[in-house]
Image (tube, rainbow, N blue to C red; front, top):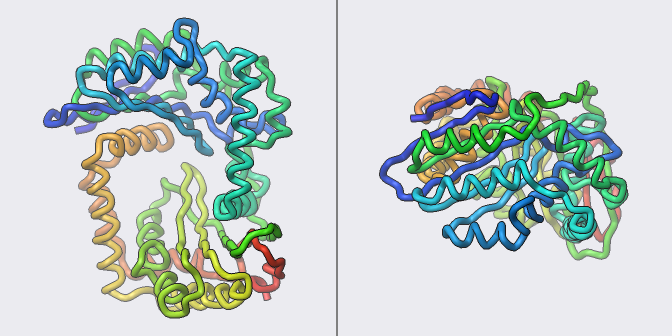
Length: 416
């Protein structure tokens, strides 16, 4: 059972207790990500995440790591478009000690200028690593294209140029504005002492400001665009994308099932057509990307340079078939079983449970029971899939990105 508490400090604590396990996972979810940034501080949310591990007023970076090892814990963090999460998993008896380490990082980090200079270089290497990975690069490119001019199109990592302009004053200023008690959700799953966790969180979050300083944003209309990057590589990586729906949309469940049928599994239409029947690609798939207020649908394929146009024609064929004919009863039934199984498997992992309840509470201010989720998937009809396909089924409406060793006219192949 999920229990939600509004603490006196203004922070929400959401807990799901499981008495039969001997471990617990705790995550600190902060509603601060790339969407909150401006051009001059692009990448600052991710920069702060890195700096949280570089030392506090009472712990050095080494001591943070040693203290986690001392209690047998594992910890990490990640930054997304809308949120940053710091999390730890330990034995049940040590979860408060683990939480104390994370809370110390969150509220007492030093943001030492020398450490900032070192970590800036580390992030620049991370950016280079993405650029050196064509499939990562093409996905980042299509994300920026499909959400061009809107907050969700912002890069999480930033650029070397934007990072060079983020000094300690700018970083601390952003941290002070965004890391507020009302923009934080603490999620805990597993076996733990609810009262002890609540008291610890209440006490340790006091140094943060009460309310987040908000940035007003306005969504701009979707604009189709294309980008082909030529590199010295042996394969062409193609990604197409078009607007979809948000994670709070009633059609969310239809989109999840549609994706499973089109390109979300080895039995999917794209995989069977493009890889198994035609042998055009080693990797081909489709994917939904959901945010709290928007989303997009994407298709990826890695192919030989001379197979790009043939692969795009095969993708168009499958999109047209999906939009015009929909799906069969058998396909829909299979997709429901696949998606529901994946969901249930996730419930059996306390880390996954923590991520689920924390993210949904932070971004949607709601948490669905397993029965509600399974019921919503079961309720999806073939007509619902056809309606979803009408939104993303027009091949000629897609943005396109490619990283390739042989330049080609992607725009012509999509719009022509």
